[in-house]
Amino acid sequence: MKIIARIYNDYTSKFGVPRQSGLVENEHSVIVFEPEYRNPEALRGIEKFSYLWLIWEFSEFSGAEWSPTVRPPRLGGNKRMGVFATRSPHRPNPVGLTAVRLQKVSEIKGQGNVLYVSGADLMNGTPIYDIKPYLLYADCKPDANNGFVSGESALLDVEIPDELKKKIPPKKIETLVNVLAQDPRPRYIDDEEREFGMSFARFDVKFRVSGNKLTVTEIEKIRDGSQ
View 1 (tube, one colour):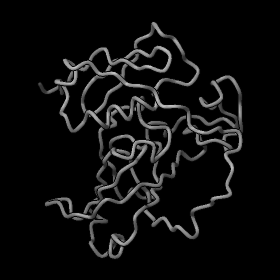
View 2 (cartoon, helix red, strand yellow; view 1 turned 120 degrees about the horizontal axis):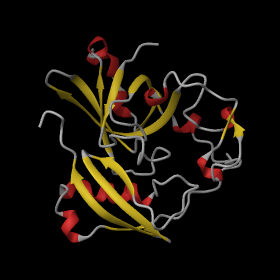
View 3 (cartoon, helix red, strand yellow; view 1 turned 90 degrees about the vertical axis):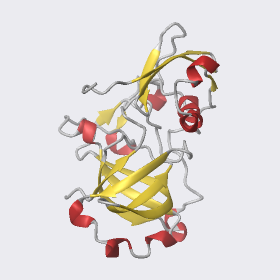
């Protein structure tokens, strides 16, 4: 399959990316098409839809060996399930499926028409193989059950000290709080003394979790190698 586009956002590492799409609605991404697919006719009518399906590659796992069973973090990482009963990236074909909200279609000089979307669970730079409209009458299944997956866990209370908030652009703070509230830690790790780190919007964010409270302990800008 050919890569038709790539998505760009503030998720610069695997750690911290929401586990499912739509969990952080105020996360904004832009989808930029490869030069071969920048014909505006290919997007005619897409602005009529509120949601889109993205078919994409788990590029960070491409080439990795697959296993018929995996340990879903949701189950504590100590119970195996069939790979096809999970959304694990360790698959025979590392392909993901995500529904995102379409915010707008806009033209950027040198990049053609791009798609602004929200609620993505893809890393920055992830290659996209296809885009399809989400159809309410066909794609929404109100009677669906969640199998062995229970409902979403309660959100964490996030505290960022005022002196650390000054280190990150104000428009990024709300999204960062929403990402951290999802509890980026592996489900099977619950160590109140351990400090975790993740990259977000070119910042290195460190935090600790005690009970239902997550406290950010440091925010530092990640410097490019050229600097």
